[in-house]
Picture 1: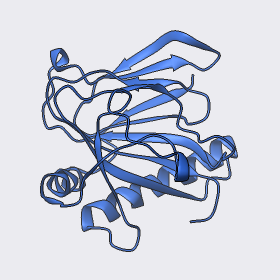
Picture 2 (picture 1 turned 90 degrees about the vertical axis):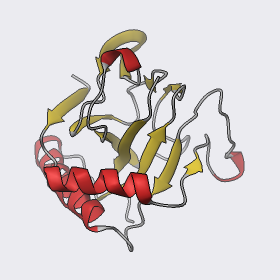
Picture 3 (picture 1 turned 60 degrees about the vertical axis):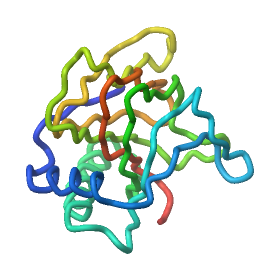
Length: 186
């Protein structure tokens, strides 16, 4: 299948530290769509806020996350021969009413993002709050294959370039760390 879900892969102390980072870090900005000259804020398409994790200034929790992700990267390379070289990511907050319409995680003419990852950081979550990650079939983009609950410590992986996905509207703040395994050099 085109995605994987793993619970308990990231240590509890790292999860708590990441949650602290989200709650205390200044500098969260509204997320946009596009890149470079084509970057634009489009709150009807995407209404989350984010803070990029700087590889040169990681908190202890962020360093622990990237260390764990690096072991996942190595396992993916050994299993699928992907040539993944590094990971990048940001802390993400969807406010109540937040969502992200269906999209793929690959920029046009840039095939460096190969595997997307999302790590959920809400201590508790009620299904009725929404905020699920809806994944679609790669070759049948109108076919829903999964609605993944944003459960504490759950890591979701999927192909960046072929899996359409969206974040359903949330009724409570939805917190995560989100990123990509890339095939280029940092």
